Length: 226
Ligand code: OAD
Image 1 (tube, rainbow, N blue to C red):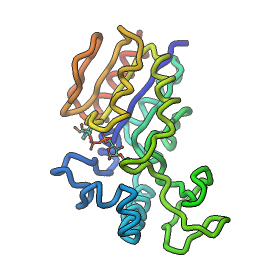
Image 2 (cartoon, rainbow, N blue to C red; image 1 turned 90 degrees about the vertical axis):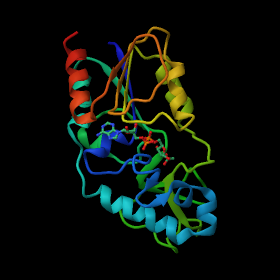
Image 3 (cartoon, protein in one colour; image 1 turned 90 degrees about the horizontal axis):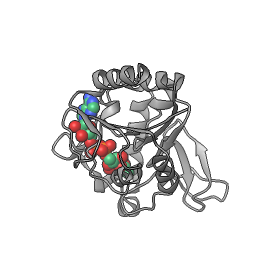
């Protein structure tokens, strides 16, 4: 079975109603990302960071996967499919994708500030005073700017095994995620679906300048008919 690796970014969830990071003058829900997504922000303004992610979590629970998330599930009829997402939402999982790797963490999980391996499912607000079993504050299970990306290595290994790469809805500005394209075998067909595609030239690159809910089903249909 051929292997398809999908690298998704915020754009795939835009039509579900979740805002991207860099489309509105670089502001994310009215904040500079460094104000709310960095260890310094956590040190200096914990309440703001908690409230920001609490709002994102509440919003996530009100939205649904869209046609792009759903189309990727259909690929599993014919291919081994590995989703690598920069998104912290669970819309790929809710659509039904079997293999989803989250590079930047998950909004519906919390983790201990004492032991980073102590991670738990969390659907409610995280509040000051919510502690882990070691009586230490819980934080969102999100990779903030300046923090290590522990899932990068397994993601790179998947890319190295890809027969086809699909990239959807990402500005390709954040590393190391954007560097994953360098791990796919030379000549591997790549599809890039984004209304404002921004990617450097590669051999076998097909650019589809469309929104995800329209462009992804088209690419999926093409791959299923091959
Ligand atoms: P960005 O906000 O940087 O880029 C969003 C991309 O989605 C842009 O290229 C848009 O053109 C595209 N887009 C917008 N609407 C779309 C639609 N309907 N269909 C398809 N594409 C659409 O988001 P990311 O590249 O995902 O990290 O950002 C990468 C990382 O930066 C995020 O994971 C986040 C952020 O800081 C962390 O939170 C650690």
